[in-house]
Image 1: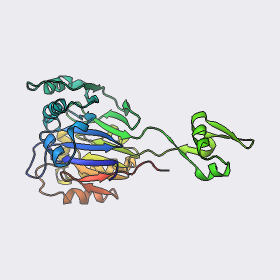
Image 2: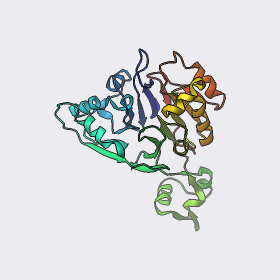
Image 3: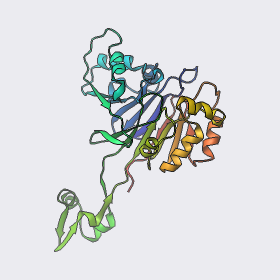
Image 4: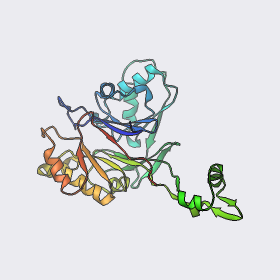
Length: 307
């Protein structure tokens, strides 16, 4: 199974349905476990998907409307019950901190987990908010009715070696590691620099963009990503409602994906007025060549480092 796997836990919008839960999305990323949004019922959906709550290391909230956050008390209390050995980072729009604090203390429980709350300040362009050896998490402001942020996850910067060039210069085995560490190496009287036999590695990446009108922040977050997950609350027949309520249509999401150069587009957060997503798929598919509409518990895999 891929170590870069995205799971849709809930794909409805304001109101859950018999087949669509409130919003929640899980990303398994090279041994790291990230949860994006945490609507009502997310804890149970994690169980259905076979994902352990104890494994969660990051909970990234886009905004504090209920369909994206009312599952947070249960998940935090479950984390506390299971007492993971690692801290859990919760990110959220800084302007909405009071709501996060209320959710954290929504009921009586024995709080015994290390929860690190990381408010995200408003920013027109993506800014790095968390960096680990396995991923970099960035955020940017979106255009909704309340403070909202979108996220981008990608591998840390790295290099890809030109194996042919290494062989031509007799650089093999431990010498490759020496070159990586020191930036240059001499073999048989010939000096080779790291830049001569390597190039920046293409990094696996995902953009997570929920409630928003099309905006610059969404496009910048999704620039060149392998997978762009974006809300498509409405089809074109309700484009006026998208403008009024601060959402996007499927076609608008596809236009953002094309402008950003996103390789694949996954649509979610569907209004309950739609009994199926065929219209969304057709309208977005006419604009972007690789589109899927998500159902609860769907899984998508990402391509790892290229080169």
